[in-house]
Length: 205
Length: 205
DNA sequence: TAACCTATCCCCGAAAAACAGGATATTTAC
DNA sequence: GTAAATATCCTGTTTTTCGGGGATAGGTTA
Image: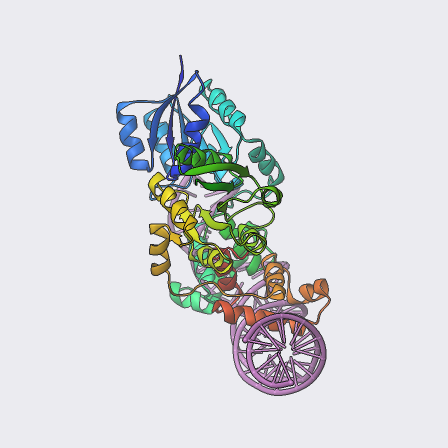
């Protein structure tokens, strides 16, 4: 029985590319594509694929959220995350939300097919490069921030000084300073510059 | 005479997608593809296309630089920039470096073919969405940085202090301070935090 | 209840950055 | 060849950050 596949990606060229890579495989069946989360869910309502290839950067609802929703409603669907970047933060998040694999968009045909077949058997598959970047970047991960810390981080990024932040949040400067110090510790940053850069890279700002 | 096209993109799926979108058009000929700047230049050495489709995010040398180089050596080649994002900073840069068009990767088949045909006639073509985002985001634009400023900006982002940067670059702290001041002015930033955030958003870091 | 997390506040001193001026070579561009 | 841009350096003062501490109070949870 052929593996039924479905694709969600807002890039027409990527959809076409994947289709042309998979269409000549006899054990892989192409059910169609969606270009956003809503029409993907609508499609699943009628027909359920075995493997769902999903861009993690979707307009509106992110791939991360869509992945969680699909896995909750249709546990038989295995999800493969697709992305241009191999950012460990994205990979980790997709995994946490139930994805079975992660493939970079510069993957070869062989890699893509292996991913589809592996995941269809209920196993996990990661792009070679994705694994490398996970290993390389094994250290930090995404720090867990409290609500207040996120708030302070946002204001720091907007260029406000501790004094201004204190006024805005109706707290003492000392408190803001403590939050700031905790942020530096959590991000393992030397100063505000590296803190902001790290936060931007981890999509926390 | 068919329009000879060539593609540079490091994403295999995108190459395949474009190929499958263009291959059935009788007035468009597919010369091949390259996955990085070097092999693109090597190809051009032997065969010159009419239209060169080029991802702006290439590994190593950026699409921006490749575009300039190609236009200098082969003025008959018209370049179309390809990108996932419609960031006005990228679009502007590609134009400054001699590109004739800009198409988003979520473009439709019709749009892509129109772009190729328009550009082949020596005219300019912009994705509908690219034009929109240019209009919408007319405000700030992207600051022009000198080589030294970019260097200093990078080191600031990596968390080095002015003293450390001075040592690294074998210049005085006062000079580093001046570069820093100029960066703040160019980015219209209040302090380092907002500078780094702005630089990250504009992909300059 | 005790341990833990979160948010709040405080002190100190050294280091760094921000602000405000100005100055001088060397390229680069017109 | 002249003007503009770039890179370099200087002297101040004021503000902010950074790195140590430590303390209290409320909520959660094991």
